[in-house]
Image (tube, rainbow, N blue to C red):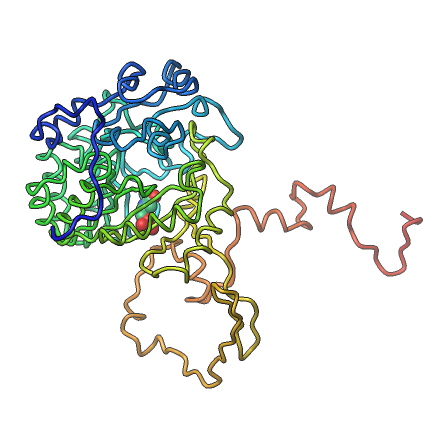
Length: 446
Ligand SMILES: *Cc1c(COP(=O)(O)O)cnc(C)c1O
C-alpha cells in the first residue's frame, strides 16, 4: 500500500483490545453487538431505538465492533448508525409493503437459486451476514441461524446449473457469501468452476465494509484461483470508507478481482447529491467502480428509508457530466413482483426529426446531431455473430421486436379482452350496448 487516504477508528471500549484480536475476523464475528445493553456501551440510545430493540419479531440485529466504531456516538442521525441500529420506523407497515417484493421465491427452480434473467442466476448460499442492514431486501430469509442452506441444497443448485447451459454468469449472494466457512466457500467456487458453460462468477458481499479483517491474504489467494471472478461491495455513505476498507480493497484488486459498488438510496442517510458525489469520488479513489444505485425495495421494515424515485433521478442529474463517467452508477428500480432491475435516468434527448436528433447535456447546452443520410445497414446474413445468435424462446424481450419479424408484445388475455364481438365473450352485454347502428336504423326503432 503506497499511500493511505482514509483514517481508522475504534470506539473507546475497544481501546485495550490487542491488535491481534481486533484484526482477527473471528474475534469481530464473536464479539458482535446486538442488544440495547451492548449498544449503551458505545452510544446513548434514542427512545425510538429502545422501542425498536424491545419489540417482538424484530429482524435480526448484529453489528461488528469494527463497524460500530465508525459511528459518531454524539450524532443520533449518524448515517452508519441508521443503517444498522433499528428505530421505531422499522415496525410500521406501509402501503405497498411486501415480504418478498422481488418475487424471488417464485423465480426459484430450486431453493436458493433465482433464475430471473436469460443468461445469469443469483445463487443464495447463506442466510448469515457479518452485520444486518435494517433495510435488507431479503429479511424474509436472512438472519435466522436455524435456517441455513444444507449441503444437499447446494447440490441441487449445482445440478440445476450443470443442466442449464444458457447460464454463463453466477452471482453468489445471500446473506453474505464471505461469511461462509472458508472450506465451504472454496468447495462452491470450485464446483462452479468445473461447469464449463459458467464463464464468470460474481460475489456480492458487504463483508469488506462490515468486517474488512476478513479480507486476508489467504482469502485473496483462494478467490484468485477461480478467475474470472468479480466482486461487488456495498457502501452507502463516505463515512464507511475507512483505512481498513481501503486496505481490503487494495488486496482484492491486486488479486485481480475487479471491484464494483452497489448502494441503496436511503432517506436520511444518502439522499443528497453532495453526499453521493463524495461517496463515488471516495470509491474510485480506492479503485471501486460505482455499479448500481438502488431505489429502496418495498420490503417490510424499510418504509422509513424510502425516497421518491425522483430523488434518484436528481442524483444522477447531479453526477453525470459533473464528474468522471467511471464514478456514475446506474440508478435502478428493482421491479416489485419480479420484473428485474429497471434503469431510470434523466432525459437527454429533447427531440428528433428524420435527419437530426436534438440532445441536451448536463449544463443545459442544447445541441443537434446530424444523422447519416446514407447508412449502409448492418447485414445479419453476412455476420457470423448474427447467424449464431441463440435466444431462449420467450426471452427476446423488447429487443426481439427490433431483431425479428415479431410485431408486438401483448399482455396475457389481451386478445380475449379485445375480441368484443365474440359470442362467448364475457363482456357481451357491453358490446351489444355499443353496437353501431346500421344504415336506415334509428335509435327510436329499437
Ligand atoms: C441483480 C440480479 C442479477 C444480476 O443483475 P445484473 O444487472 O447482471 O447485475 C441476476 N439475477 C437476479 C435475480 C438479480 O436480482
